[in-house]
Length: 314
Image 1 (cartoon, rainbow, N blue to C red):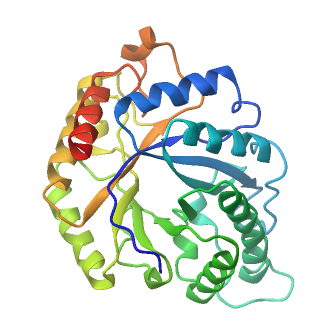
Image 2: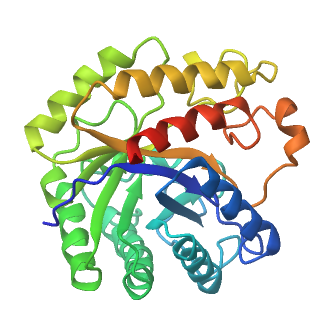
């Protein structure tokens, strides 16, 4: 296992990795603006699409997924800015079903799609990007994101991680979903635990107590591979809900980040964040007040993040 004790002052960039939106002047501008928030890490996030939750083919070489050249451009652009890079390939369902519901029968049934078929395709997908991560010197690789129904497949995940380590020599993490930190039984196979930290603003102490027990059980480094809040009324209580009704509110987003940073800073085992998120194409800065999404570009939360990250690096 790799040893790791660095603070991750990170941002998630480029989601969902739509072909044609990277390797452009707009993407270059986006990356440059992101670095102004005192980030030292970036998660370069791209998605491939399987048709449905029960599909067993992940055609990562097809649209809408960014091309390999675009992925390599993003890695090199981040490196040009002096950032450590986590490559984060993710699978989505083209029919809109959340990836957490990708699932198959526990035991194979003739004529039905199977875990074996799916993991074969998923393994090819992850190993493809593992090779890119190795060739481009990415410091970290995230091998999966919020795939709740797959988490129980201990044997398959361990086998895939072993195969990835034959290709990739950097740090390996898995991004479990919120509330799942203690449920993954194969944390010993990766280098650090990471999760999606979309917790209600008034529950940070309770949730961090729960996460702490899992972190100490496995004796692994921990960080939030995702964490953030839309700039929208009501979002601090439901930060994972990007469709929550409500008007734009920079103050609500700022309040959330202040509470999260304050609570997490008290935990010595907390090693950082890859905040959600920073798109490859930014809205105009003068539109920030009317933007109600997660990106904090031009919003007052950006100063909170910049100050917090700057303090951790000083």
